[in-house]
Image (cartoon, rainbow, N blue to C red; front, side):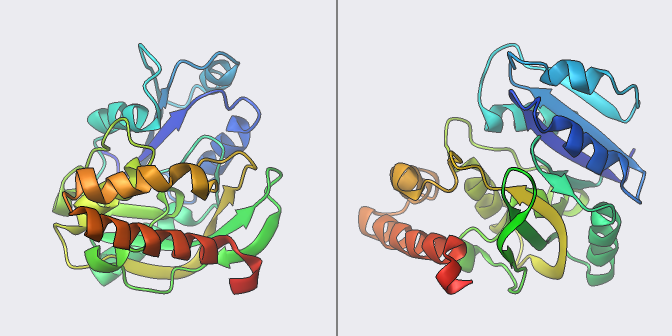
Length: 250
């Protein structure tokens, strides 16, 4: 059983996947398994992955294109590590990410932890101030803004179990973290920058106007809140999302 399972969905990421692979192979902690589920890519993504013969890299090819949540769930089904963490196929970890996060979680007896991450353009050049891991995360404050980014967070599956993603939602990561935090009191921050997030111009997560409805459904459908309560949390999320990416507030 490896110490940590890394979960990655891939879809047409031939432009970036090699950098992501390099960042995992460079980790100072080597006791990991990396389960990549390719979501029916039509480019050379899988060919690039298959060039690496490292037995710790496990490639699953989805039978159909089911979206990132579906791909992550297929990887999670195979995961056997105590710690679970996520890395999209176009993002990047600093070499000490896994080691620092696991040592921190063991020292602090944390069930969930998250770190700072750099917010970069497509060439991994920082564009605005790093996103800061500066608050203890609870279910209640996560309702208003999703501070837990997949690429800089980790949870202890031995203590909280595996948590799968709701398929079909564009906000599946937020729902997953909320469901985890229903089980435990808090997630703890590690205020070190150990990851780089590519902010694509066309990124769904940056296009707030297009996903207001999806965010509303996080509360209405997945949390089973009333319409008024769902609108209240959606408004809070939208305001916090603006502050998260506005240079004026960072």
